[in-house]
Image 1 (spheres, rainbow, N blue to C red):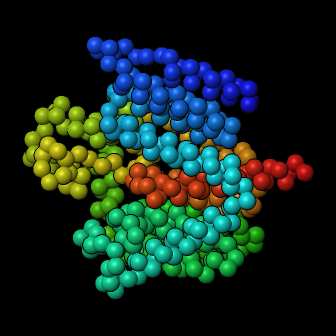
Image 2 (image 1 turned 90 degrees about the vertical axis):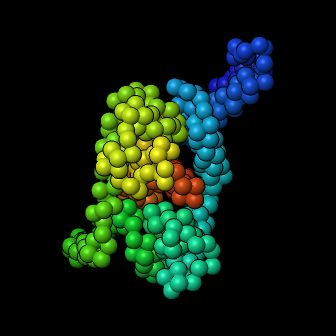
Image 3 (image 1 turned 180 degrees about the vertical axis):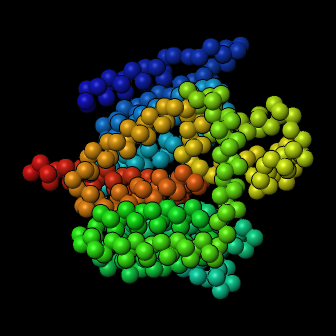
Length: 378
């Protein structure tokens, strides 16, 4: 494998130094810059392949989607963020084999700090910024990302000495008033209790407790408008997907595609106001565009069917490697389920702090899978 990686590095460097794209009037600088980016990304794909082939495949697909169907500022910016995330993942998997406990403790500290600011905002003390019209958002920008952060960090509290603080995280979820975070957290907790509780007689009362928490949230907070917003967005996305089902519309280009849909149909401001929920639109037409509120769905539209294949392969691989050791891997598996649940109905990986936590969990997942496999082989 090391020889293959060496060959990939050498060929990529030769490509970077020698090859040129055809350019107008001999202006080669932009061509050199593009080739430089491609070569470095290809090398990173090769390095990542040694740790996780699905992560490497995702990076390779992102590289393709950056250029096809069109290279622009949005796609270049999105690809840069993907590269940063993959680099962080590789660093954590390579050098973080003894860091799992410290990373989990760090997530707990982050969540408690977030909850501290939420408590201050509940009592009308705002030490940070006046965000989102005075809503409760902790250290985040809006309610959805606030609840997502709390839900993502919740599995780290499912450990001895830390589990008593989980009640504060549930408070943060309630205070944020976001259905996406609460639903993901309850799904994750349901999985965790099913796996970890040995005496199945306790499953029913625990399950009823989770249902009661969910029912209280539904009663006190209006979730129906939230889902109405999402359904409106997803219905428009379904209209667009068949146009680019194979290769996607391009990394980071969902907003452009929605704008194209508006212009192609010559929609008037009146029609937009009737057919699109107002939360999706900017103050003035035609600058407004829809927000999809589903990281997984939006990535599928931008990157095409290849993303679904890679994600499906990754989840099957996780299931195969973890089967028979669910109790030992309960915490990272719970985190993975929360990521999938929240990413399906929320703007999860598009928000930098939450995306970072997702990457940390994926790295912990890989580290723990390798640790369990090593113990099984000894």
